[in-house]
Length: 301
Image (cartoon, rainbow, N blue to C red; front, side, top):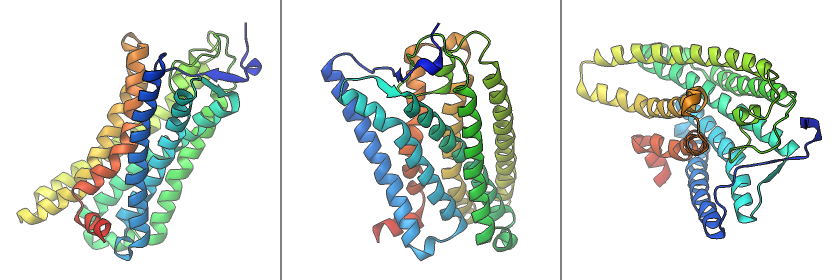
């Protein structure tokens, strides 16, 4: 029975066996990766360089773009390199680093989306107190708390996952090191500690989800009370991009980690992994720029 301590590398899932399909996979992922780099890079540059965008909403958007860039850079480059060089290997330390960074950035992004929901709630439901409640020091602390929560979650999950003995080989049935796929390699009953940590994390995620839902319930009630149609339209325009990003993030992530075992299959797991790890970082900049006149104007300048 092989133990995880005897592994020097893991073998990731190969998208294709033929050289032509490997190059096609590399080209598709390269296009998505460049689009994510361009979109998030533009948002970061525009928000950082434009004084008119130095507001809490755009400060949090800048942080979201940084997290998106980090998360997609954690998974895609290694997968593209493996297809280009016709290999499946990732080192043990590389796999543990990939797990840590992905959970760190994934958890930080969800925490930041919760903070952004609070920002929208204060802006629409408590507009007279917005300057007091969302001062620059407060915004910095909330952003730092979001990053710190992701770091602590990642440290806990990574330490637990890679302390579990692995007895089922070193082949990970995914294009990046994903915790559920690594746990499939564990010895019987040795993964229960990680399951316990996952239950705690899921409970915290559920609390954040309830907070977001309650915030938007109050936001929609406040918006419907606005007498002018133009005012309602402006308020909805402020909230819809964030709501769309939250919906995309939660729907793909929830289905990936909470889907019934009966629905699990290698092809479905692969598609779902691409949906929750690749699509949101590439699509988020487009969602935020579509209905944002200030951001569009800053991009033109």
